Amino acid sequence: MTGTVALVRLALRRDRVLLLVWIVVVVVGLIAASASAIAELYPQAAQRIALGATIGTAPALQALTGPVFDATSVGGLTAWRGTTMASVLAALMSIAAVVRHTRAEEETGRAELVGACAVGRAAIPAAAVLVAGAANLLIALLVTLGLAGQGLPVAGALALGLAVGGTGWVFTGVAVLAAQLTAHARTAVGIAAAALGLAFLLRALGDAAGIETLSWMSPLGWAQRVRAFADERWWVVALLAVAGLALVAVAAVLARRRDLGAGLMAPRTGPGDAARYLAGPLALAWRLQRGALLGWTVGFALVGVMFGALADSVGDIVRDNPQIAAILAMVGGAGALIDSFLSAETALLGLVAGGYAVQATLRLQGEEAAVRAEPVLAGAVPRWRWTAGHLVLALGGSTLILAAGGLAAGLAHGVRIGDPAGQAARLLGAALVQAPATWTLAGIAMLLFGLAPRLTSLAWAALVAFALLAQLGELLQIDEWIRDLSPFAHVPQALGRAVDAGPLLWLAAVTATLLLAGVTAFRLRDLRGN
Image 1 (cartoon, rainbow, N blue to C red):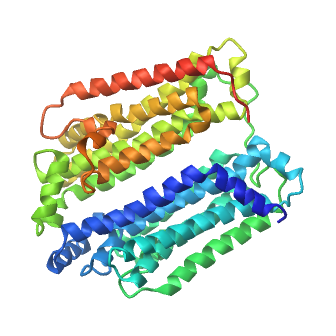
Image 2: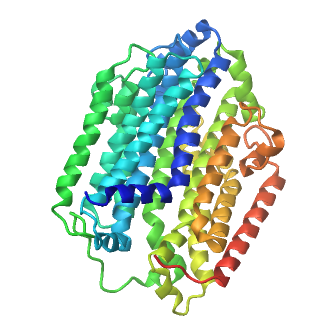
Image 3: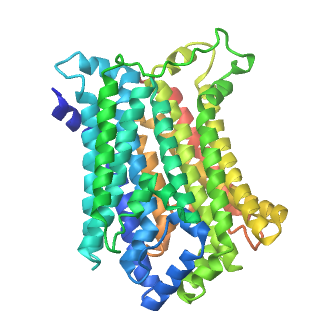
């Protein structure tokens, strides 16, 4: 364990911006904002009870957010609305932090350099686990303070904070275990993310079908069953803590059985000769990013099915609360309440697709940092062609996953109302309208990569800022000119009216300008290694 403290300080220094964004803005802001919104939209106990009754008869809604254990209080509805989403975000934060400071360090060779000093073999993974664990503890503390500061019971606030932080701790263990299995950071992230997806699926199926056994097989189900603000079960918090500790212990044992830089699973041997279709930069980018694109596409399709299946129940949810009905109608712009709901959900899909656009664009930075770009660019491949291959995947891939989400939502909604073809076409168009806004995030990421590759994390900060402005700007009464800084504020309404192409053309022009500036800056600067 020698050197663990120094490595913890180094990890905190490297991740200070990302961890701050995850902890304060995303997780804590989500739950605190949910509590404030519920208190405003459902001020009367009768309204909250009516909402709880509707939730109990809507399996699609329970699949998305889980069951509600106490609909009489603001705290109980806050736990229903925020536990699953915040727990998923905490898990993603933990996975990203742990893999970055363990498997990614080995893959790039930095772990070997660090290990050549007076550093113990267990110091690197221990530092990663300590940083992720401390981040989840801070999440628990800030959630508790944020909810208690709004006048909610302290015990319930603490239970909700520990449920979210505890889920993040469990997936800290999942991530460090995945890092022992494979020799590649992206594969480790994929394994941990697949475990998170399976956990969400088990919880969703269990809650929707009323099968408690399935829900108890998922850490996300455990977080719900802490029952914050509803006769708290503190022993479930202990279960989360023990599960995370057990996973970390198993990872520690497995770490002793492998060589530095290797994984327990032998890497698959590739063919001796490359296929003919891999003869260009675009084909290389496709080969590198096809797995991630497939995962995003399947995920968007599943989420689209959930949104589409839920849409027909919106009327029941807001029937006894005209205030929230008015707000949903305003979010959708005009038209029927269901169209307003679907418009809001396609806007949410657009925000999430922006994450894929940033990730795909910043693959350029990963290739450069790993010194894989240098041998490619040393040949007859100009820099603009190399970047263009990845940018095509970023722009085209974000459009593809939006199409998958919109098409799936339209089919699911159409099956329920007897018009699958018509609704599929409508929702496909509504989702694709979001594409130009997501492209601007790829442009921002490319500009940062070209001008200041050390500051590319600001692309993620821009995505979070746009999401907050889109989802909470009106609730927090932020000035309209500030909300207009988000490209998603300019996406026209696509359901129930003709689409105004003007804003979409402007967004495309802004994207083209950002991409051109980023590519030009990259052509003028030196390459950076690891």
